[in-house]
Image 1: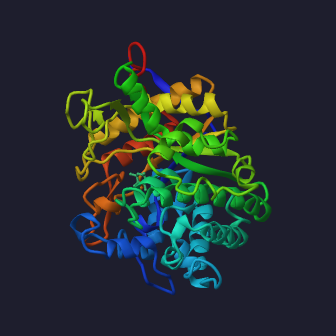
Image 2: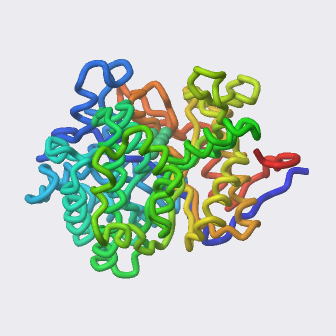
Length: 457
Ligand code: FCB
């Protein structure tokens, strides 16, 4: 008989979205332009020329979306604020209509018994700030602190869960190094400054949020794959270590270890610091290591790192048979045990007081009968349970995503929703995985996917 896994009574069952991916209303009611508006309006940047101009039209359909969440029995909803909707120029004058939109949403959520988790920055920087250099400019960190102050003053009486940033490493390496994401910059020195200013802005924002929203929990969300060396060869292990610019470059300063010296040396050799690390000013590292209440982890896939033959680029190996079950439509490996892996890696290394899985999910385009997504979620939730059994303070889980949405450079072709969205009509229909998730929440548990035999790797 399959084992039934019970979750703690207080476990936070949630779903997540992000402003640019669902809202639409890109230039309505005084909203300013964001870097993602600019990027998606630039030909050739996003698959199929897709934009977030309308997206899921959540800006107009938010009441219906709260009803959808209610029907799922969600305990919490993680969403992000569009900075440019609130501060069209990134700082200075506040657009009251933008603030009202979020204030009404928060009220409706609370009335429905759903706890709001707000992410301040999920990538849609006001274009006005980009025009001054964006995150490569230290002044953007100051503007972020101002923005955090404005919104936590306005919503902090009702919102008690705050996430400063979503995945700063993605902004850094995809936005400023390889340019796949907005703002499309390709410059290593700008990327390392970006990382620093993102972290610094977090450090400055946390005390302001605490001041404006007493008793609130404040944290940051970092992305983490389960990365493993393809073999114990020196080359594979070194490739794996270098890949930790995606994780340790962010975790270490946040938890008081500063920038890791080995990765600093790697970056230096690649020309990251033409004038040294002079962008790090006195007091910055102290500000960045401000204590937080939780860390949010976004986990999607395992990555097996294999150094290429001499002269070849490093590769990601694909160790499992290439089936839709094993690799989602994004070609991301479905590897539930890796979630146990990253939870342990982060917890036992950094000891955050609490952890939330703030995103986890799979890209499959099957309209309603999406059993592959259900299987993905089931094995990942089983891994969460094993983490709880191992004593890891995992407080909640947010499925990515509440509904199909604009998947950044991939446009609308990658669908992560537990709800199908017809992008022609805006109609929403719960998928089978959504019905299954509602049952998990109702029973506060699920049938286990068996643990792997032998070592997790
Ligand atoms: C994460 C992002 C989220 C979504 C998922 C698939 O990196 O935070 O917005 O795009 O990937």
